[in-house]
Length: 349
Ligand code: DNO
Image (cartoon, rainbow, N blue to C red; front, side, top):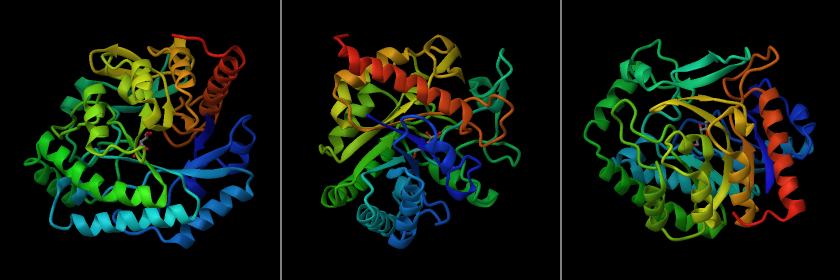
């Protein structure tokens, strides 16, 4: 297992120098943020980022994410152009030494939360998802603030996208995903970059939009669309864990050899379809991090891992979910468990 930390590039208030000082960190996961969705990431730009990270004493082997143009998800006539650009980006990433590419197939919105600064009993703040709030929210309204939302869309573009998705069923989305994989995984195999789809967060439909990477049966279906180690997973404990029917340890055991990137996050389920993001430490949330890590250890996991969202603690102001302090604490907790597993041999579950 190689422990990494998400870094948002030069604009991130968290610096590479700070990340470098977290014990056990091998690298960061990052992306090129100033290329519009659908355009090719040029090799020089990627190499420059890789060098910047290297000069700070860290590695950049995982990209999170290469975003997907909505035309691919919608399956419009323009999709081939965007798929070609995606493949070209993969070639350039491979040339710069990238091994894993994380992406998602969620229509319009990426991860969704109802509040970004919910105050927990200990005074820290965390992201929270309350189904009742989301059900009442209007996704096209200007004052809705969603953390994963690409704010580069104008309101008009957003309305038009939502309109186009009215005709897209889950089965259409599956067909469009398969179409994408059939071309992209071929390139991924050639250039040896492992694709790792991120599950939908939360793993159910929001704002009436279809979502399909939601649990065991659908992940199985996804993996069989193209049976190759290059068609793999980012297994996000917090995303999938929001549905208590998803047993994360079981998913790790079942799909172990197809997991290339592990997102480790705890959440506290507060009621049906509602949860708050807790500290990583198992007793703070509903997931058992020791059991999950044991499943990774027992499956021989040697991919990349990162602590996922942290709370805001110690007065830090930063990007919601992506501050320095709580994620650093989380990483140390995870590394401590992993070290124990390595020294005691893991044992059977
Ligand atoms: C949220 C992240 C997601 C993830 C994308 C992958 O914190 O886990 O935004 O990066 O869904 O494409």
